Length: 246
Image (cartoon, rainbow, N blue to C red; front, top):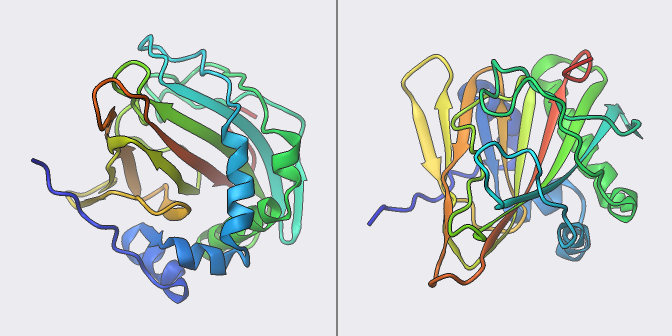
């Protein structure tokens, strides 16, 4: 039986320090609420956007376990601007499985984007990116994911351990339902070090300096028999200079 390691959370005051020292920072759900100046109720309203996600039609392994939406924004200080809908594109260098092709996913629902907490979330992540790289506009992609056990097993990162080709990656654990597995793993991009842990708290957060670390999540399985389980996450990336593919 594999041991489960608890996330080594850092206080809000140490986010920038942890990112600079280790390449990643973990924030507890209660601290995320404080960081976003929000309430669990507001975050639950945001989570409603996960209940109508279209299936991912681009999975090259033939799986049916992933559904998602995708939208893009530019965040410049307190200004959050949603850009016209665009494809998600990554080079093969960063995604050997699905890179090199334009993937057109359905956009996030209008009601989700209109929630006040959504703009605050993007602003906070842009602030964290600016603490790493200096204040500037941030080209931000938001990915709303559900990985389920329709196929008996679901793969949060079918491409394996990877970088995303951005400056900052934020992975919010939104919900786990009737699953086991789904361990998060973070490794030094240019060294032997690494850590693994399982995010369980709804709206706990993993921040990654994408230039320094690679990351992955292990597959999920149902807790009991063939009962359907799922793992909901929100992944937001911040990139300086423009969107990938421009």
